[in-house]
Image (cartoon, rainbow, N blue to C red; front, side, top):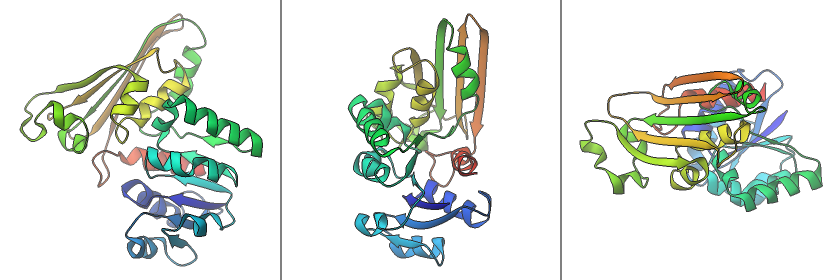
Length: 257
């Protein structure tokens, strides 16, 4: 399987390393990587046989079986439809799908060309069970995201609290998953994945918390309904980018397998 990778930051470079180590299996190869900058560094990481470029035309000239997006929601808007015109697309920035207009455009492009859009489990677990639970009536689905203050730098959280001086957990947002995806595009993509897996954007209630008492990016999902009660808690070791957990890298590798 010939894979094209968009983005070579903490997430993209983690995916590249894992594929080169054979963790995605012997039949998976990253043959092209589209980056905004640091082309030489990405080229050294990718190794021989992989075209590393900042030119989208050169990237999409490659014969690809799958494009993996690991560059943020804006990259989905820029390149999602172009990728689907050529091959399947795997999205790590699933928060982009909270935009109904964009999601419908991607779905229509996928249908027109006979492609599929894949969303890996990312930073959480149990999406299959949550989806099953939401087949019947549910009273509540709650997703709480907690990350250390450093993970919220460069976000609207800096306008709400003094992150560096934070001594106790601070609630940054409480509401539905659609708005959280808009407010924190690099931090809570997984909440969109949870919404798509079962309850939908309006029925999924979310809390977003900056928590100086933890060192791991933590997600807790609680659902209650006709099926009974479900509770999932995942504590993720961050990558070099504190916004992204290592489990997200592994979820992409698992999807590639």
